[in-house]
Length: 545
Image (cartoon, rainbow, N blue to C red; front, side, top):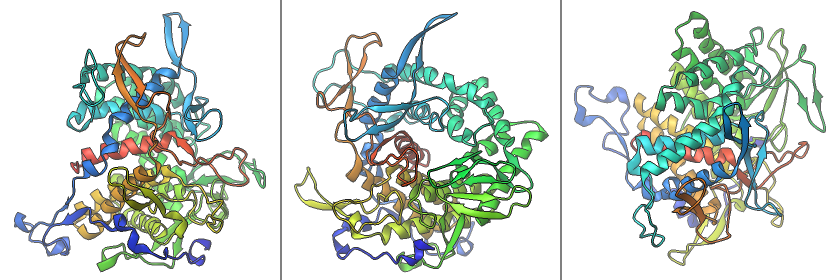
């Protein structure tokens, strides 16, 4: 494969990257011992993995008021007033997708139609922030005393925030309910689960669970039993290739692994025998993609002291076309990566998260091994990436120069870096997705007693998110304020007046493939922000912060 034959080299001076090698977590005494070597009746000898640094301080931006403020502002700005039989109401005029980093629309979200696959991420972000305020209020950094930004009267209260988020969640979730009937897309997991799973778990609204069940049944209609997969795309339309014949082609993309969570969740929440089969479909699909989308690599972990994953490492392809009658693979392609043989970083990240989720549902060791192999290869490509990944920045707090960016992946790990004047873009969303998957691997490996490898993935996930903040956090911050307005006393303002950037992160890449019909790179990206918020929530849920 190109991903292993290109022989990427380490940057010439790795000693500068001190941040990349800081120990973030400790394995307590005994952690080098396997679970089977620990006396199960002697709780004092049970190894644990615990942070040895204050992770919340290290990743403080993940819990900042800036994130809340930007989400609330976008939720308010993006509404139209409409009139129905019930009277006037507000309704989203589109769903946020990208934020331009240049040009006349700099700093403002650009919107997509409700049918687009990303429509569930912004409602999901609102629900994830609401979840924070309800479940983890001690970790939500909101200035309510007026000291940080000067006087505010009246002061913002957490109750105001909860009431505002409740209103915003209701408005933005409403369009998603009708999506459950769709049988024209495999992306129902992305569309439905970020918001409606949380609505069900936080409010017990039966409508949300019914929508999840309905969506899962709709997704299952795309299952092709003879091939053992759920059809991803009905067509592939690019400048260099066109596939429209569904009778002789089944197009599967690596992203589909993260839609399986919908099927498992619905199967677990249903009382019918028919719905239990949803989990079987999901598991069959996941097994098939091991053969069709994963490419065994000859490289091995670079982790020191034997703490890395020592099994097979895998890169991933983006698209595979199968014969619907036999399941035989016809060919592999890319629609969003650099080349058909390259490793598209977000595709690799989808595989980490998707297989980690699949293991959590099935507890099949095969899926854990595969997830570890894909995650370890992701880290290998970060660790061996070309020197163009390292960026010198001045630390405003200390005035010293530090090197950042090593852990913010290129949009494709094989994108050429040989022209300093035209460096390839990054994809912060790929890093965020991978970090979430590695947190799940940390949890799964800890439960099995593999503490050194659990520690490696926890450290790596923290490092990725920390480096993402250092390189790609938008300087244009927002904050909550009070004042008059039709939305009530709670308002949002720019910290520096007139300096606005709607998303939290920059440097996302939706699709930089040279043959893409819609080529977009280096911008804010809604699912980059969503997985950032999701990562913070996972840290809280696991008790790491």
